Length: 128
Image (cartoon, rainbow, N blue to C red; front, side, top):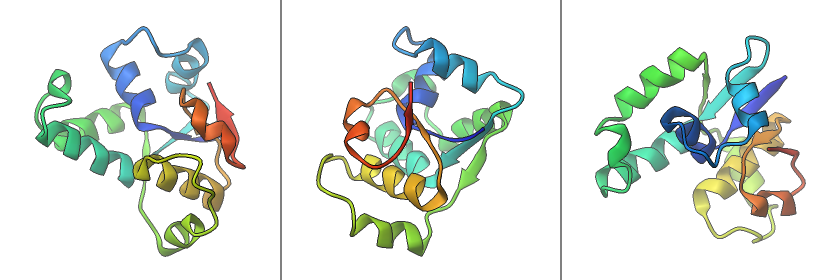
C-alpha cells in the first residue's frame, strides 16, 4: 500500500514517542508499504526547528531528509493540482499544513497515516 505519512506520525516514530499507534509503527517499518512524505511536512518541520519547537531532533532539515531516506520515503512535491484541491476543502481544520496534506492525499488518491482525528472530517482515508 502507498501511504502519505503525516508530519507528527513520522516524528513520533523517529523519537520513539509513546503516542504512535501500533498500526503506524507496523506501516513505517514495513518492507512492502510505500511511504510518501510531503514537502509541506519538511516545510513545517523547518519552521518548528527554527522557532525552537523541535529541539529533540536537532537543528537541520537535512537530518530529517536523511532519516526519510533511511525509512525509504518518497518525497512528494507540492504541485499546482494540490493547491487547486484546497479550494474544494471545507474548513474542518485550521492548520494550513494539514489542509495541504489532505489536498495532496485526495489529489494523489492516498490514505494518510495520521493520529489527527480532525482529518477524518474530510473525504480521505485515515489510517491509525
